[in-house]
Amino acid sequence: DGKAGIQVDGDRFIISRPQAQLHGRVASDSKAYPRAAKLEIDAEAGHFPCVEVHSGEGLNHHFLSAMVATKGPKSPAPEIKITRNRQTWQIQSRGLHALIETTSRQPKITIL
View 1: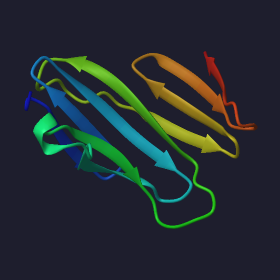
View 2: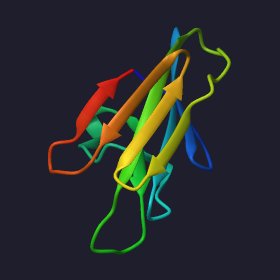
View 3: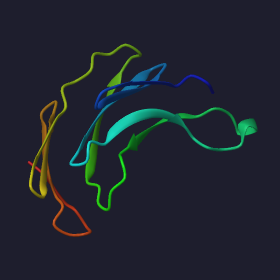
View 4: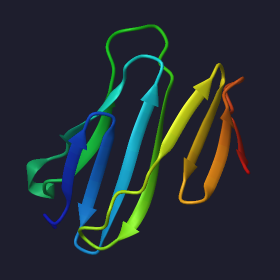
C-alpha cells in the first residue's frame, strides 16, 4: 500500500507504518548489520520495503535481531540491550529479560 518506511542507523532499524513502528537491533559475531532493501517480487505486485541483515563472507555467521513494537508513527525508540557470552545471548527491553542458548541447532529460549 506504499505506507511503510524503513530507517537504518548502524545496528538499529525502524519499520514505520501509519499507526505503529517496529524498532529493531542486530547483534552478531561477524559484524553483521541491517540494511534497507525491498522484497524481490514482480513490480506489478507492488513495492514492499524490508530490512535485511548483511554480513561479509564466512563459513559461520551468528546473529540475532530483537524487535519491539510501539504505537504511533513517531513513537520514541525503546532501549534494546543485546549481549553475548559464548553461546548465550541476553536480551533486555521494556521489562522483558530473555536468554537464548545456541548450543544446538534448536536454540533454547528462556523468559526470565
